[in-house]
Amino acid sequence: MIFETVLLLLLLTLSLARPPPIIDDASPPSPPRATVYSGCKVNNTVALTFDDGPYIHMNDISDMLTKASAKGTFFVNGHNYDCIYDKKVAARVQYAYKQGHQIAAHTWSHPDLTELNMTEITDEFTKINDALLKVLGIKTPFMRPPYGSYNNLARQVAYQMNQSLVVWDFDSGDSVGATLQESEGNYTMAIASKPANILALNHETVKTTAGSLVPFAINALQGAGYQLVTVAECLELDPYSYKEDQVGTWDKTWFCPEDEDED
Image (cartoon, rainbow, N blue to C red):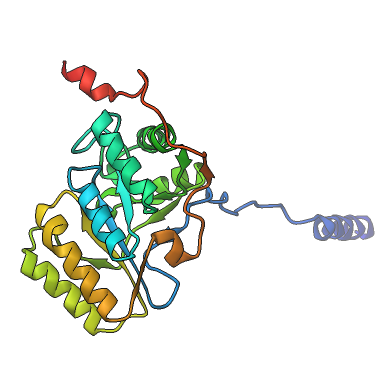
């Protein structure tokens, strides 16, 4: 009886001394994701941005901004309305760039990134980034997702490419059916609310935007005391992560593969 009691106490002691099992219930760390900017940081600034080019109105918009001592930002595609490698199209991008306007990326073909897998998103980013390096000799740290649509996968790819995503906090409505008067009204209402700053979405592919809305917006915003600057300036960031001394010169590698597929 004494022996059994001693044995029981010994077993109990060993059981209590045994360390608890280690259970690793921690979730794996999330992949790093790019920063998303949806507005400016610097007070009293407005960043006028123009999507979907390079299009036939790019030079006119550039001239309007320059004449008003203003700067704009063009988020360009590789092959949307035009092929960026066409000589006349590449010349538009170079023209705006040489005037001091910021050129940034808007994917190669303007897809909804949330409908693509990682390989497809990477291809969209890589092709437009390669094009800007060839045409302008620059690497842009800014990518605008088409339709302002993105997910964590798109942010992961952007991070891997050392880019941030840029959306907006004001939409002129020019690409979604707004009339010129409605777009002007949108600017008027935005200015009346007296925001500290504005990151404005416009589209250089809309004829009335290039012909009438841009000069209206410039006059209204400057009249309200805002300084019209690039996205990089309104965020206090560098516009380019790499910049060569001169723009590129056309050669046989400048072509859109999709054009060959159509032949």
